Image 1: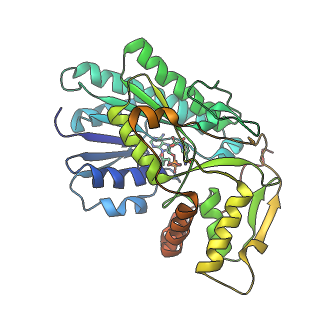
Image 2 (image 1 turned 180 degrees about the vertical axis):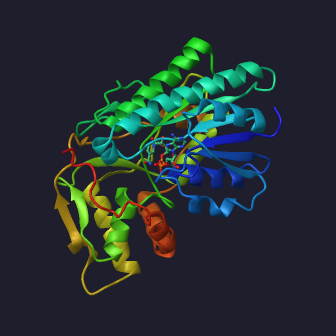
Length: 352
Ligand code: NAD
């Protein structure tokens, strides 16, 4: 194959933007084409550092627009498709599940159809081609106090979001088994780091804390998530798309299980140090009514990707949280601009 061309759907989102910067930095011969609908979650400000790079290009489009995907493939000739485009916020999926089905299920289907057509039309040039589908550990449902999700865990999605991601995972799998499309799927835990839209826990708490607002914690705060530093995730996605075995799935985790309340307290402690004030930030913590169907615990056994592809997370949770809080302190303008639209950090997902 010639120089790699990475076609990154959802590249203007949180993980996508970090991935674009990572790819441009670590693959100096590669071109990176972002294909993104630019929903509320897609922010061109997050891609600003890439815009002067001649190896970067943005196409605004919907993954469900098969014709536009097909025409873009013909023009840019991708060697790797990395599918990160999705509706991704559980609370929004409770308030309005339809768009989750449309993008995550039907969009993935249309993207696969376009990809299959492209690979079949260019068989010789697309040897080594890979389609990476980026999914979540939430498809496996909820764990009790012990145990870990493995690649063999049963699918038991509990929210419209996780159900739509599970549907997409099954369709991706079927395109390998039925049509021989060289797909790889990753299922990862909660990401955190720069460029995350401030409706998610870590940026929401950081920004509310700075503005003296309540720090909302769902239920008793004892829900446990595994936290993965976003750039560790990007490194995992790159090994998976370059060296993953077609048809295989890989779990990706950060080896950092934390209760939500402890995540919030850690952010408060970092802020007490970096932006001290008369009262402790933890005094702003407010317990709010739990999310309907809130999964209790997610935890990942990532030994397969570690063993087979040599991936290991490098960032500890404490160091990663500090870096993240520092990033939000230094990038208040970014946060103000991305929330200047309709979302104002209000509570979503009451399910009523
Ligand atoms: P995000 O919501 O920040 O970004 C999603 C991006 O997809 C946005 O840029 C949006 O404009 C774009 N998009 C939405 N609908 C589209 C469509 N129909 N066509 C083209 N583009 C569209 O999401 P994220 O947090 O960066 O997550 C990326 C992927 O990783 C998602 O598939 C998500 O399910 C998965 N994931 C995320 C996490 C996490 O902690 N953030 C964890 C596990 C898995």
